[in-house]
Amino acid sequence: MDTSKLPSASFPTKYGTFCIYAFKEGRMEHLALVKGDVCDKDDVPVRIHSQCITGDALGSLRCDCGVQLDHSLEYIGAQDYGILFYLGHEGRGIGLFNKIKAYELQDKGDDTVEANERLGFESDMRDYGIVADFLISFGVRSVHLITNNPSKLDDLTRKGVAVTQRIPLIVPPNKFNAFYLQTKREKMHHIFG
Image (cartoon, rainbow, N blue to C red; front, side):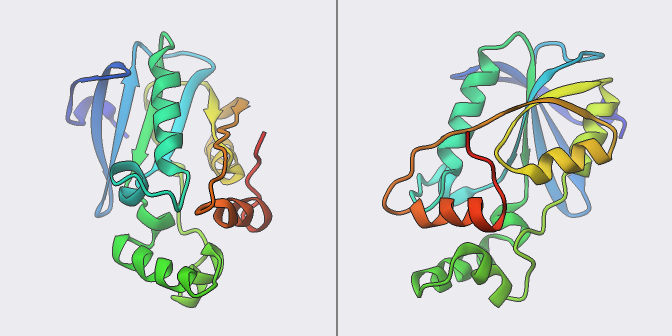
């Protein structure tokens, strides 16, 4: 990936000023918010966040996405440098329409994995290789990855980016997302703490 050819702009936020990049993977659109100078750095704080319109923009309590996004931006904004990737993987890659269909199945008793599978999808359709390509193009040699999801560590490592530290994202459960978080831990092997 040649990041010098990507559209980019200054992006002031309540968490500080970033440089925002837009990039594509097929028809899927992604963003990278880069804080400071990350070029040729080791141990760059990185968050890979999948788009969640319901949690990030609408404040849904069914998931922990919006809170994770806020915590990650606040953390990276307080550092000298770091990157938050905002990937267009709505509903773990099944899209917004199918995500709402999965919600409907969850309302009838399915967990989040069962709902995706009943709709004919894998439990998680995401791949994070594009993030490794972006990091490598900036000369980032290693990262401190802000995540609970072991798949993100595996994908980055497989593509040649060293993960030297995992920083957990702990979000206290509420009555609407406790079963969802339990499913992430038990069936998707997310590591909390």
